[in-house]
Amino acid sequence: MAKLTYYGHSTCALVTDDGTRLVIDPFFDDNPACHVAAADVEADYVLVSHGHGDHFSDCIPIARRTGATVISSFEVVSFCRENGVKNGHGMNVGGGYDFPFGRVKLTPAVHTGSVAGDQQGAHASGCTGFLIEFNGKRVYYAGDTALTMDLTLLKGQVDIALLPIGDNFTMGPDDAVRAVEMIEPKVIIPIHYNTWPVIAQDPQVFKAKVGDRAVVEVLESGSSYEF
Ligand code: NI
Ligand code: MN
Image (cartoon, rainbow, N blue to C red; front, side, top):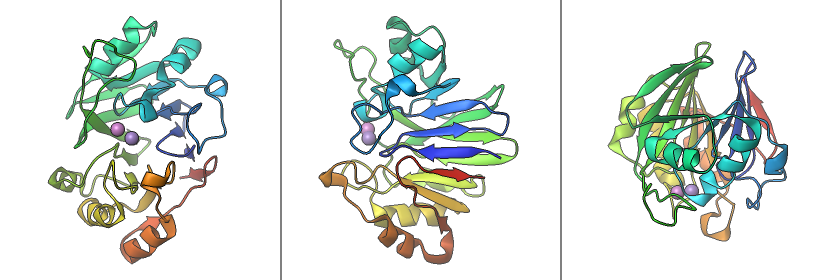
């Protein structure tokens, strides 16, 4: 079994069947929806979709303390290395790589992407998503994307999709339903909502809108989905 734990906003931990611990978009200490401290997080890999603080703020402390390998865009990984992170694996959109636990491919995400803490702005990067494949399971983490026709390329390749529904900074619930129609995942876990009033959404309304197109698993912060 694999286990995905949601920590509110877009922060997740994925433990693969072989026990490898992946943390995705670590935003623990300043995340109003999260009750876990970054200092208590263990990881073998940290995946970062982009450098905005609500996806990246605890990446460097966790990677420095645990020795976890940061998987992200070349620019974000370079910034991490310049700030004391020993292990990093830079990638770019459209590229995949076979890690010991499985394959990670960076997918396009329509969004902006400065790097929090980069005073010179020398590491500006876009935003990506991740297609993570291990043990015959396929997880798509969309990142902060808008609805885009690129999502149709994922059709038939995704079992579990983590999609933003918050609106304002990302796609909202109605566009997320269209994303579901494009991707046709079996299971959807909504993310990037209710962290602040500006992205307040009722996930049960989203679930009703998805209807019988897919199973919507609404996870409370700190709860897990096993698959
Ligand atoms: Ni962002
Ligand atoms: Mn965000």
